[in-house]
Structure formats: C-alpha cells, structure tokens
Image (cartoon, rainbow, N blue to C red; front, side):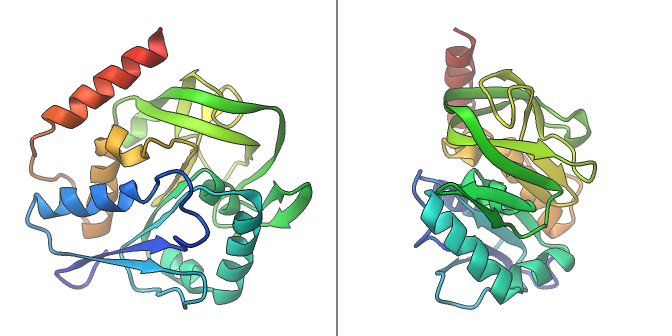
Length: 237
C-alpha cells in the first residue's frame, strides 16, 4: 500500500517488452485512478535503468523470445522488483512477462530461469495459441468474465503455490483449461487487447490493492462495457 498520497505506477522495460500494445494497461490504470481523484505518477523504466522498489503497481508486457530472456536476466540481477513484491506492491504481468514471473520458461529453444515470483513454469506447446480468449475468473476475486486476445507459443503449468486466474471457456490460455495465475497481489495472464481496456474491473482491483481500499467510487463505464460486450459476443460465435 502506498504511504504517500500519490499512486506510483511503473511500466517495466518498455524497450524490451512492449510488442503488443500492452502499454495501454498503463494508460488505463492512470486514467481510472485520475477519474476518482487519485493523483498518479507513472514511470517507464528501461532495461538499462535500475528498477525502483518503492512504487505501488508494476506492469510488464509481452514480447519476443530474445527480449524476454534478456528482461528476465536483468530483473534477476537488479533485484528491485523482488523487493517491491516483498513490500506488498501489486503486479500485472502479461504474456511473456507472465511467463518470466515463474520458475522457468523457454526462449529460442533454450530453458531460461525466471524470477520465481509465481509458482509456475512454461514450456512450448505443439501449436501456437492465437485468437479470442475468454474465461470465468476465480470467484474469490469477485470479477466478471475475462476477455482478451492471445498470441503465444507457450504452455504454462501451475504449481500448488498459485491459483488459476480463470477457467477457460474460449481459447487456450495456460493449457486449454486454465488461464493465467494469481497469488497475493500478483496477477498473470496471456490476455492482450490491452487487458485492462477489455477488463476494467481488473484495473480497479489493482487500484484497490495498491491503495488498500475495499471499494472505489463508480465511474462511467459505458464505452468499456460496450467494448466488453462486443468482444465477449465475438468469442461466443
């Protein structure tokens, strides 16, 4: 939880992991905080910069194999993200960023060590998962169904230390049955779109975690709900 009045959001390594428009998650979070009068500072930390450990929310996106492996190496060596998580920061990890939060993943045919912040590992699937992704989110999180677009060659296997973010109803996700993972204040998902544009309730959950609130004032979600309805309907056809 933030000890100051300003909410601090970090976008991790945009020079390596920003291939699929996932920077939109940063814009959505900042906008939804501002709509409620919450002051926000955003930081885009490149891979040649030290990772601050005192922010409230950290976002990491998708990318190709080489940048994914390099990002994992640098985050492990830096240690700032581990300190932030240990201090209670909230995290949203997308696709390649989600995979590298686990114990290991494959990049360019080689097994690479991950950050070990989620109890999972990823390997290569027989086919590439591409298309609409939909799932029923773990009811303990109190969120509506997940909608997104997936584009990944990996398959992710969850250990006992995490819970699936959702049960897949359309698409592949982790393995055709579950999608994403969560533990504590860390959420991981294969959902692009960007994820928080399609799932504003997840954005609000991250905000609530970050400021230590049980609820947030309502905002006008007319357009986000139209987008959700369109994409959920498309995934049902």
